[in-house]
Length: 176
Image (cartoon, rainbow, N blue to C red; front, side, top):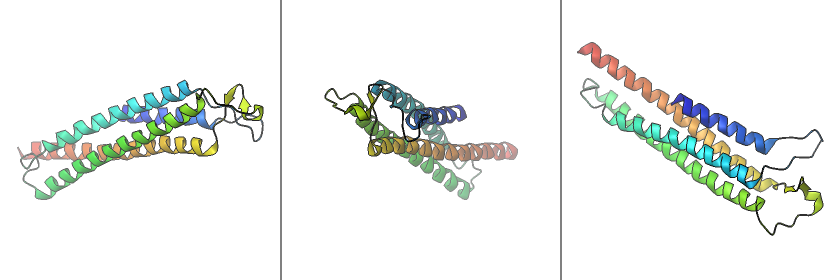
């Protein structure tokens, strides 16, 4: 789980690095990567985050198996486990929603970059590739950041769930 979270984080950092690169000239930005590069980064981020959500869903399913017997009939512990399971499922859903936003924004920016009739004046061209205007770029950066944020929230819940399952197992084995 930790490796998947690190993969998501590193992919986000690399993706944002492409979008936030600065040149040595003050006030001048280099062109964005091609539409294909942006799409490739988005697909990789989608794959990494989807695997993270899948692992979290498996953990949430495993928490269903932590029933009253495993929790030594401690009602409070069962309620906490159910709450934790619901929180993990909700956080997984939030990551999925963030990924939908990323897909939408990636399509918008990639469509802009690859538009066949894109007629830019020479002052807006840099190395023959267009520079995306602020709103499109900021929405894409926001979508990427939201994926990172929701994946981080999911990771924190998974860590909490892992500790809860470990505590339940150790208390069950001590009482046996």
